Amino acid sequence: MPKVLAEGGAWLRGAVTALRAGGCERIFVVLGATGPAYRAANGGWLVSQTSGIAIPEGVQPIWALDWDEGLSASTRAGLAAAAAPGISANPTITETASGTVDPHVAARTVAARNSDAGTVDDDANRSPAEFVAIMPVDTPDVGPEVVARVIAAARASESGLARAFFGSTPGHPVVLGRQHWAGVRASAEGNSGAGTYLRQRADMVCVTCDDLATGIDRDYPAGSAL
Image (cartoon, rainbow, N blue to C red):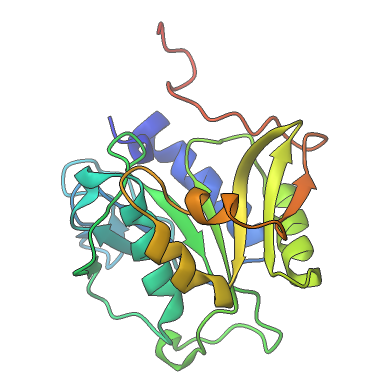
C-alpha cells in the first residue's frame, strides 16, 4: 500500500513533525498512488476520500499526476511547489516533464526554508524558498534533531548541499540549495530522484547522524508478520 497510509498515517505525521520541529517553514506532502488529496468537511485535507487520514494542519498536499512512472515525480513536483512564491489551494501540479513518484513510496515530504523574518500568515506573499529538505515518510525514526543538523550543514556550506549519513549509508533528509533545483529536476528520471544529481557532485556535505537515528527505511508497518 502507499506508505503514507502506514500505521494510520503515523509515518506521515512523524515526518511532518520532524521537518517542522527541525526548522522547516513550509511543508508539502507529495501524493501519488492515493490520488489527489480530498477536502474534508472541516476545511482540512485528507490523504484521500476513502482513507480518513488527515494531512496535518498547515501542510499543503501536492499530487504527482504520473506517480506510477517512478520516484522522480515526487522530486519534480515538490521542487516546483517550493520554487513558487505561494501555492494555490489546488493540490494538483501538472507538469509536461516526464517522471513521477515511486508507487511504493507514494508520499514524500518536501519542506521549504527557515524564515528569518518569522511566520507569514498569507502563503501567497512568501518569497520562494532558499533551501528544500527532501524526506520520505518511511524513515520513521528520523526526528527533528537529524533534520536540524542537516539543514545547518547545508546552510553553512559553500555548495548548499548536504545529506544525512547513517554509518556509511546515505539517507534522508537531503537538503538542496535553490541553485541546484534545476539540475536535480533535469537529472531526475524514473526511480531516481535527487540521487543521480548528487552522485555527480564532489561538494555535497555528508552529515553523520547515526548518533541520532538509524535512518533505516521501512517496508512494513510495525507488528507486520512480513
